[in-house]
Image (tube, rainbow, N blue to C red; front, side):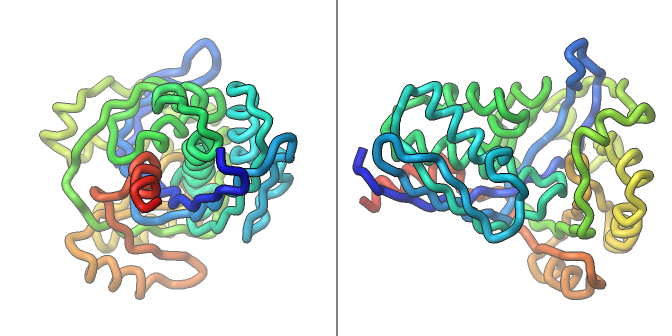
Length: 292
């Protein structure tokens, strides 16, 4: 490894086009089915490799609490331990993805660190190896290591790539942080969805059956999420992503997305985003290699 080498990766957010909860497992986790889409809303993850026996450190332009509890540092420490490397690193995050929004920002950042440090430390772990490590930390991390669009099942570890058409979306954030565990532990959560198939989804992508089973619980617990969804629903079939609090709407054009975002009342935040051609972390690394 070239000591003090560095790189910068764009860690994308994701949308859950639907999220069905099939049941609860004996270990307390839930079996799910969902379609994930990476979107053009990014955190910037800057990684600086450090010499032997230097520490792993993290800085961020927003307050994320104790850095030692952050998923990014935990990912770096896990990779360091599993590879038996003695190199260190500093990770600097520039956050654009809202925290606690159901958009996967923390998991995407952690995936970027696993992919980036694998490159900087010259570890040569395969994509599958990195996904296996990521699954130890969070269910969404394996998806972000792959990127793109995917049918996701199990607890998030079963990932089947999809090739969906490019689309524009409005993503709206109500400035509410929702802990994922709180929604999944709610006794009123519906946990008996019927399993579906990729073929059925591709045949009727926008059908009403493709719902988010977490939405009823989240909107009951957090009325601001319900208010935001109702407002966005004036423009079409709005839906919550993940465990919330963000909601989103597919639109027909960039101009329509821009107009809706411009009309969104404060303190809500709106983002116009694209999906369908988002560069994966692996592709970003490959292009950096070609540049060098």
